[in-house]
Each structure stands twice: as structure tokens, then as C-alpha cells.
Length: 297
Image (tube, rainbow, N blue to C red; front, side, top):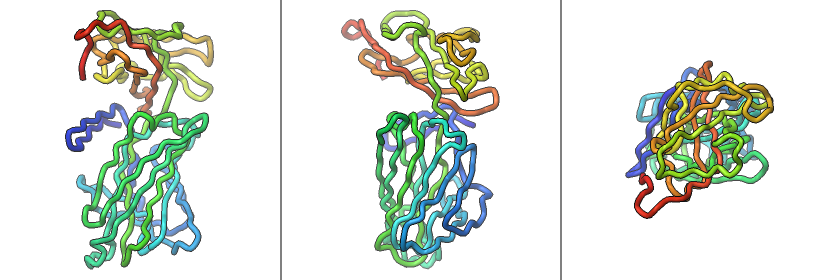
């Protein structure tokens, strides 16, 4: 568990209390098919008709020196995998490292490239998608996912290797994720009207569900809003919504959250006492702002 900072050009992304699914120590796996468990998540290889059996093995190609998980070598079609939580709970995908590699080291695959397509399947139906292209000579990129990649039931990652020659392969590592939980801004108030230009403290509850005990949330780890505000006082453990047992209720100073006028929603992240990363969001109506008085990013 750690704070995770990514710089891409002028884009700054902060991922708080997120989990990193990596593949150190996995070793060589022959497939297909195979399932690999890491951090409570499963990577499930997708078998495509006509694809040769790949050798799945660790490499050492990422900038930070960690092993990259090789999904396909000498494979001139498409390969891929499904990602899901072992407990079937929804999750948030923050980012993933994608790469292309020359497995035989002969340099004959320098012009090979991999076209990646990612599809996220949302709770309640619907999908989100993203794409990236990586040339073998470029090595590795980190693909950052926006806020639409939350409340996911699973993610499918496909690499199109068509036209590649020699012993080349697509590579994956450092999948940044967190479990999705329900939160309630201004508990008991469905309107969720917030006034960003006024001082005050904003109550937020992390809610229990049939499979999640919100009383096990560590309040000290909670961060709320774009500016990742910390709770201003001790948490209250109480049943806020009358369902599923006790919830964790905390308060944040509104000016510390970074909420601005017309923000449609706001997110919270943190950990349980057991160290499991969580994230949640709620719809809001940030209003009543006079010209020039709102916070800016």
C-alpha cells in the first residue's frame, strides 16, 4: 500500500492508498489457460483461436527495475486477459504499465508494435474504454485511467500483435487498483448541496454493505476531494443509513477539499485497518458561488 504519483507531460495524477498488482516472483508459467492471483485480484488469460501457446515469464524492462509480466512471445495475433477481484466486489482502476519487448534480444523486432485496447465493465451495465500503442523500441508506458474507471466488475485488456515478427511480446505490470465502496456526502440529505466559498465542515460517511464492514475503515487514512483533505476530528461509528450495521462518519473542512462550483461529484479514498485500499464517490451540487470566490485547481 502506498501513495502513487505519476507525471505525464503536464498532467499530475495522485492516487492515494492504492494497491499495486505486480508480478514479482511469479516465475515461468506455460499456458494457456492460466489464472494468476495477486493482491486479491485474478489475471485470467484469454485464449484466442489460432494463437500459439505463449511462454509467460518475468522480465526486467520497466524503468523502476521490477519484473514485467510477459503475456505473449512469438505470437502474431491477439492476446489478452481479464482482471477481476476474487471476492467479486467492484473496483477502481487507476493505471497500468503496458509494454512491448524483444524477447530474443536480437534486435530484429525493433519495429514491432502492440495496439492495446482496454474495456472496463461497469456495475449495472455499460462499459468504458481506452487504447494505447507501444512500439518495442519504446519499451513501456503508464496508461492513466480517468474517473470513469470506477465501480468496475472486470477489465479486459487486449493486445493486437498482428504483423509482429520474431520473439516479441506484450508486457504488463504495476496495475494500480482499489476496492469501490459506497459513501454518503451529507448523510440523510439527498440533495448534497455544498457551498465551496463558505467555511464549514462537511460530514461524509463510508457505508457498510452486505460484504463490507465500514467500521473497519481506518479514519486516519481517509482523503477527500481533489485536494485530498484529511478528517478534522475523530470518526463516529454509527449506523447512518439503517442498513448493514455500523458505518464510519467523518468530517472535512470544505475549503480543504478543493470542491469547486459545478463539480458533479466528489471522491474519497483510504484503507481499512487490515490495509485494504478503498475508494468511493458521491454526486454533489456545488453551488451558490459568487464570481471570483470559488477555489481553483
